[in-house]
Each structure stands twice: as structure tokens, then as C-alpha cells.
Length: 214
Image 1 (cartoon, rainbow, N blue to C red):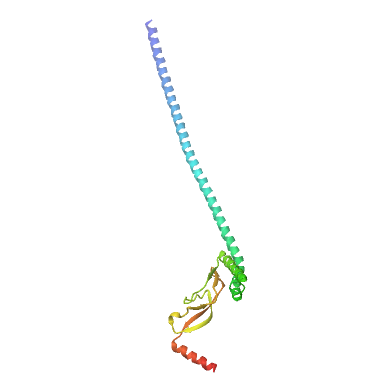
Image 2 (image 1 turned 60 degrees about the vertical axis):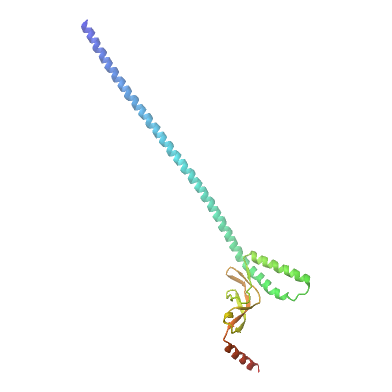
């Protein structure tokens, strides 16, 4: 009877030990599963952060690409417009040169017109010519008496000797304005200009001229 009781006690202890082992194993298993779940959550969180960063970077890239394309289109449009203007300007140069000739030389022909109606019409015609020339970038320029001569824009019609050194190479008279476009001269200004000589040189040349006339 006592032996049976002792055996029961031993079996109970063995069962209790097995139960504790099962509980410990179950606890370890639960901890492992929790750790795996935590790791998965951390991975998901990290992936979301990376995705958020990539989305932001993609949005920025698309925005920059859109701005770049817009800038390229704008620059191309400007380049095309500039090229069109240059080509148009080159084609217009011969026409502008012809208009310049008409404006300068025909004014001389119409100076002696007496009919007032014709004068008014001619005046309006020349005003229109000036508007066209200026619209295409032409500059009309007339030298004043005493101005330094501009070699690029003018041609000398007559040289007048003077004993005043301050007047040397200055304009004595302007016959017409110059018309230019950039560096191109469409019509030269014709002028009389002063040339400095000492007084005695002028007197000697005058005497020579009188002797020749005699």
C-alpha cells in the first residue's frame, strides 16, 4: 500500500516535470513566434519608409523632368524665333537698301515742287518710309556742323582748308543723313569736312590758284 502510494507520487512528479517542459517549450515557441512577428513588422515598416522615399524621389524627378522639358521647349521656341528674325532680316536687307536710296535721293528731286497738295503727299510718303526703315532696325543719323566726322558712316564730298586746328576733320556741311542697320551701311552720309593747314600754306595755295586762273 505504501509502495503504491510512493509510486503514485513518483509518477505525479514525472508528469509535473513533463508538464513544465511542455510549458517551457511552448513559452519558447511563443517567444520565437513573437520575435518573428516583430521582425516582420520592422521589415514592413522599413519597406514603407523606403517606398515613401522612392515615391518622393520619383515625384521630384518627374517635376524636374517636366520643368526641363518646358525649359527646352521655351528655349527652342526662342531660338526658332531668333532664327526666323535673322533670316527675315537678311532677306529684307536688299529691300531696305532700296528704300534708303529712294528716301535720300528722291527728296532732292522733290525739293522744288510747288504744289502744296503734292508736297503734303510726298511728306507723308517719306514719313512712311522712315517708319518702315526704323521698324526693321535701321538708324537715320545726320551730323551737325562741328561734329567729328564718322569714317564708318560718311563719305567726303569736299575738303575745306582751315587755319583753326580745332576744326580739323570736323563736319562743315551735311548733304544727307546716313542710314545703317547694325554694322551695315545702307546709305552713306555725304559731307564737307575741314582740314587743318597753317595760314601761310593756305595763302601760298591761294596764290597758286590765282596764278593758274590767269
